[in-house]
Image (cartoon, rainbow, N blue to C red):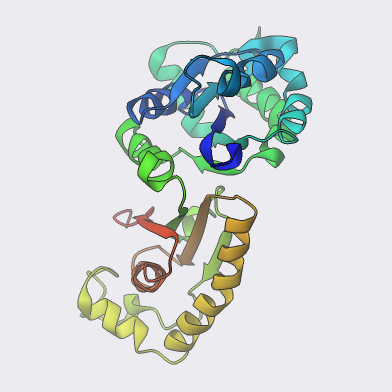
Length: 291
């Protein structure tokens, strides 16, 4: 078995307060060897553990953040160098909205590591600017704004457990455009071309998980054609992701409020994609229950 398949190095980084500690703990529970707050300059030497140690590590996760100060600015360079080695390298980037991050820092009564004499928002803005280049290099981006620690741990388990590593992890996310686009979506589809069950009295109080709503949505003109054609379009894209070693993909399906059409179509799409080899599908309804 080649190193490409045998050894995995996962870099965990992203916004302060976005859940790196939770992710590190979840990865440890999954059997990863986790190193926290490692200077980027040590990535090369620590990756040698794959081959030089008496009992080489098959799965290594390294948590890196702005606490590394000036060392952190060199992370992009070191990641580029690592990608030339025979290592299955992935970068997991965690982010959250400004309001979610401010709330988290205020709840623990701790300053943002970059705020200095300014506000928490000043620190968040500075960090976002510093992380732009790293975010562009990320293989997996997870927005934790609406996730509690248990939901985030489950998401990590779905994407990085030993049994799931070789499969393409497809996360289908229904959402409402009125609440904003999901920032971690790789692909977005809009269901607002279908009639809205909200305007049907007997369906208004129900949601896309109810059979009555699902039957109504999928029976509309264009619904079955969209589903069939979208799956046909996705198949070569997903196979390409597998060839390029991209192992985590988020497909967002939206409608106005994230209650009826997007939920029903997400469920139908998940059922269809589960029949494809080498993929594992999870589904989450971001905005269901907000209305």
